[in-house]
Amino acid sequence: MSTQELFEWTYSPPDYFEEPFKVVRDDYTMTILPGKVEARVASNTFAGSPAIRHEMHAFLNDRFLGAQLIAFRPYELSDSRRTCVHPDGRKDVFIELKGVVAVAAVGTVDIRMTSADGVVYDSKAERTAAKRRLSELVQLHRSSSPVLTAMLTSFSNAIRDPQNELVHLYEVRDALAAELGGKSNAVATLGITSAAWSRLGQLSNDEPLRQGRHRGKSGVALRDATHAELNEAREIARSMLSLYVNHLAGKT
Image (cartoon, rainbow, N blue to C red; front, side, top):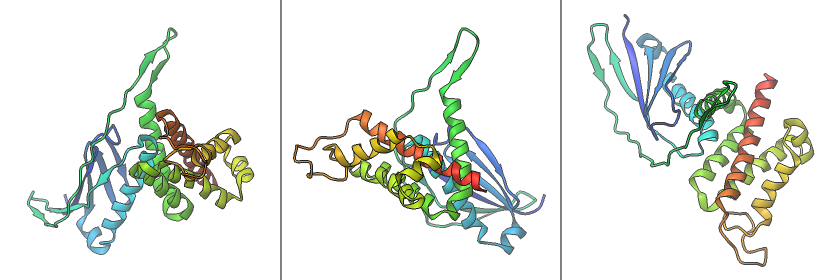
């Protein structure tokens, strides 16, 4: 066994990915576990390319951004901690004063049903597979797509700034319209329904909602958006992002 560099991150909530998984790359192997991540790099590889530490962090954060489209929860990811592991088991621990803030989050109710003909529906398995798929696609395409980066930022802001949630979700639609030449081209290119496109605009612009874009301009008293209205807007924006990242994947 050669000398290796072990990089470790912590994150919260610890069930963000729901199931452990491993990613094998040319220069490192990364294992995502509940609440923590480990990556191992050969020491000679790290010595020749120390920027790999930053690359691994960016790779990992992109995975979180993809999973966030399904989870619709904020996450906190620490900086990595480095340990040099020698063949004889001796360890050199590098002390760096960096921390992470924990975030509380509510749980998700899962459904698992078996029909009379034996077909199994497992909402957790379906959701986990969708997270994995979107995480991979975002990681592959975010760095080369400023539009995707902007849309992901808006989606993250919608989660972290609930008082302006509809403002941020509308920015996802706005970015697509600017990138693809307006509603007609965006709808045709991505397969978004006209009804969904218009509904996000209605919720964000026309309804007298405190979380919307035109507060005070409707001439009637404002109200908070209902849980159903917010969920509807989130699903539309999530679908737009998902369709766009799949569009990018189809172009490669």
